[in-house]
Length: 63
Length: 253
Length: 86
Length: 150
Image 1 (cartoon, each protein chain N blue to C red):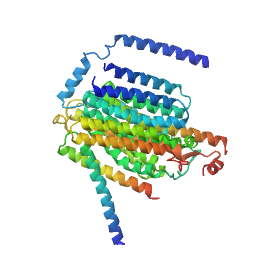
Image 2: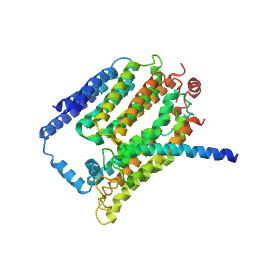
Image 3: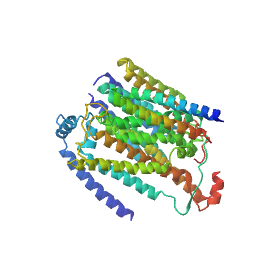
Image 4: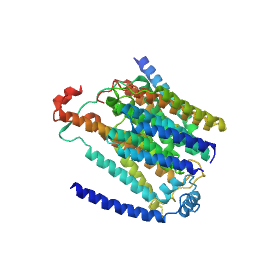
């Protein structure tokens, strides 16, 4: 049981991390000049996007 | 009655046409070289380190006008919420699950976060490049509705707690007002851009309060659009009149 | 010479706006309206007003069609329930 | 006026007039196809204009259109699915021609500009435009058959 939950948590973390990395890369492509604040804002926006991506995926397949 | 309406329309139209022609005759020529207002606006915007002059006009030089526009949107959405509420003779039917073709569903799930990120990018860079709170907020709100288009209404309802968006809407309006009042407390004027340092030109932190006001407007517009569309969707998908309920229910299944 | 572009887009916008008014069915009007919205965004870009163009694009390409088509669906559903089962 | 703006004029005039004619006449099936092709007609023109005016920030308009244009077509495909059920509208030749136009413009702009993050941004816009166009065409050609009440 614990093994299964651990596995599920790992999968969830992996999914979120993959989305976060892809979206953060996309943010770096969209902006023109890169500085620290830009990176921080981009990382948080990518995190919001990753959460929404996972929530949307679960909402559609969970039935 | 019909005739009266026509006469009224003609009189009103003629008056409007006369005023428009009179205004057109006094306009400066199209594509001229002299822009007295534009030059002053650009100068003021550059002196406050705001790269996008339009953002400077909207959120600094004429931030009070934007407050009015924001209140209009807020009041309009409030009116729609009141008008489109579930009435006594209406009942709520569970929305039916829909089977959407697989590529369309995958596209919706893929574009959903990309559109949200683009909306946030447009909001955050309002003072640097074309865009701002309104445009980005609408894009972010539209992104959420890809779930309805690519799957069904139940999927959208699962990621959209409506109360949160209603609260965010009000909080964002309050945030704009608080930022304005902070100017008064700091000893200048309502919504005056003197609170924060102007920052380095053409970076995310430039423009003083412009990015903060932009973010407030972005939050307000995004949640207002979500709330508005939620009530339209409720009416179009869920809410049914109870008259002839049984036959209609049988027909719909 | 660059006026040619302005003229082309202005003529297209005028034609599309007239066509949108001339349609009788709201669903078809919504189709022409969304086309008009995208064209207007191009016109604003040509007139060097990208901020307004972005607003028009954001509102006109997906949000307005969705609002109109949801209203059309509601009206049609109500019309069907008034008639009773077919 | 430079070559980019001239290309945008020709592209916008030709494709815009064709789309206007398609969207205002004929059965609903033809109108939604024309509405879908609007995105593929105007988005490359916006990219060309950004290059012609020398303003990289105008590319954001094309990005938003490439994202939201197909969403608008999905709205019509979903909420008009009853009207479209009779003759499922598909015009794959036109769709692929529009995709080729978008690809050609994006490639031309990538070659003309310096390689860098701006090039990647152009490629992202091109991918969104072509992918969205194809998916919207797929949705029109019976992608919402299983949608009844919702």
